[in-house]
Length: 409
Image (cartoon, rainbow, N blue to C red):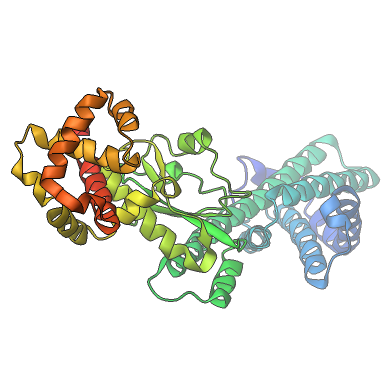
């Protein structure tokens, strides 16, 4: 991006009453004035008061000299553009941004330096006996000079910040892709990328899978500024949160509010190099949320639904299990089947305790006994086989979850 071209001279300045020889006189004093201005900036702006390395000292000195040179050039030719000097300040602004410093420091130095240079100029004007019209014209040129260099520096700063932000996002995206990729993750490679992405490497992470939105704007990226690595363009959108059980702890309602109503699934907390495993779990949970097997809205924590996730990890195999162990229930009517399945699951989960089953189902114990007699006829001795009982619990629980999702649809 090219540096901005300074504004032309104000209207009427070409006929300014400034004596032509004044530019030559001030140019001869330029280095001495630069010494005083530099010293004033160092004493008034804390960031420049500390000991500086050779590069920083050279930059400050060069900036002062260039600004004074531009002022003298404007005296010699009020309509001169001063492009080269403006370009210097443009690069100075870029340098401040790339070094991670605030633009306020440079702007403060310009104000302090400009004011002190004007005081020195006033002293010179008094010594030369210049009249008020000349002093007024010089003042206009001085403030024009400060405005031009400040504007050029601000433009350079903004351009560098824009490109720096874009580059930082690219590096963070590469880091996220590495952590969530299919292959093995090298901690050394992660640390190298994290250094360039200005991201502190945590020991543990969790990955959040987010429901997609039709209109996704960058400012809607949740927690992007809280240390999370975010990729809203993937399907599903995903977010890696560092230290989720410590400083990055998910804050319950606060976390849900940060998501702005977007359904999300939080994967389990895992070591950093196993982040892909957390993503896999969160993605599966998000899919089950979409089907109603898990709650459709809000935030679902995988850690609270591990058995359900395990049950649906291989759904074709689960379907085979259901078909094999629940076949006896196919012999009863459609009206009876749900009641018998519900009673059988409750009986298995309650340790065969009839009163507990009755309380769980809100029916009379005699009703439970009647249904159990029917189940004994259907399943026989298999009801008392430990292996079969486990298979029945898994199959009946899967059927129960599917029934809940059908009701929610």
